Image (tube, rainbow, N blue to C red; front, side, top):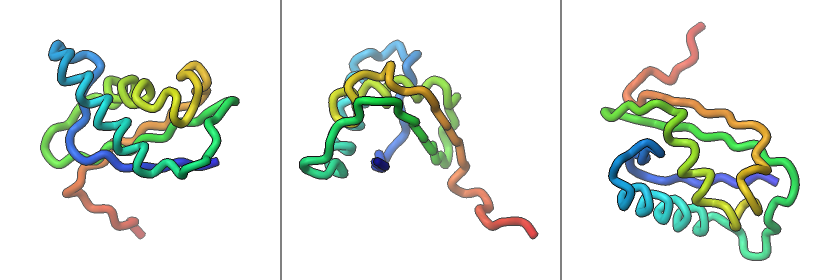
Length: 103
């Protein structure tokens, strides 16, 4: 099963001191994920691979700090517990960069 969704706006780091902002970010991620969740789709009960692509135009963050809040936000929707995640692939891409393949 493949499940994809998009969250607009800059992510919030797990390391933030603004805990309320982190809580709001997780809720925003959850709301966006729920929009793409197909009614009746079964929750994953086995191993899960998580792939994130972080597109930025001005605020560049360390990718390792943005994964955990997203993982936590979709617990109970996409999978039972985040300990099911066996692989994580995170990409960071500059939005204003050149996305053309070099020949």
